Length: 273
Image (cartoon, rainbow, N blue to C red; front, side):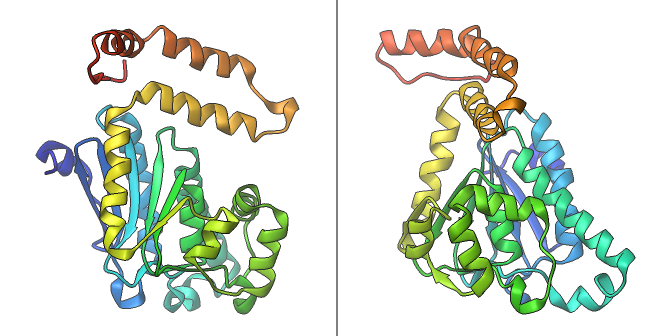
């Protein structure tokens, strides 16, 4: 169960984003089932403060995003708010800034993030998913980027995340046609990492939460940060940062614990120090 003190710290101003902790995992669940968990303004706004708390919480090693119910992860933006939020330039700018802050916060979060997808993963849902490090999905999930059917402009950062993940050809295919694809094709494209039967999704998620609880957090965070450097143009890569992260792993108490546990033929107990 959740640690009560941690659970009290992780709260949101909206009932449409539910949050709790279990062991070393922070769960963030989008809860707008009447609209298939479409993202409303208050839902976008809830994400950055949660990530800011989790960034400073040494107990948290993984953040999982999921949707309430079995029909949808996130079915896009809540278009019922478009008339108010996107009718004028100022409203467009505000809406885009909120979404950008949330998605950038996920993408730049230093600890691992995972999207656990069941059902519709459409538009903004795809953006949330591809901002995460890992994506797992049930076989009954459906994916689409329908911006071309709505006449929406698409942010550079969201388009770049999609192109970086599945390549320009596949990204343009999905974007130009706005077609829906199933989980099998999404996996073939590299849009998601693993697929399982719907009733096996909790077990697959538990595999990740258990692994992140057991494995060395400094090593994982270093790997995430170095991967981000690898994706940059060669002239922008910070090799000194990479070297420092690697050195930090070798100089950590966790490395000492890992060696001892190996020699003693037991499971290591990493502390992230």
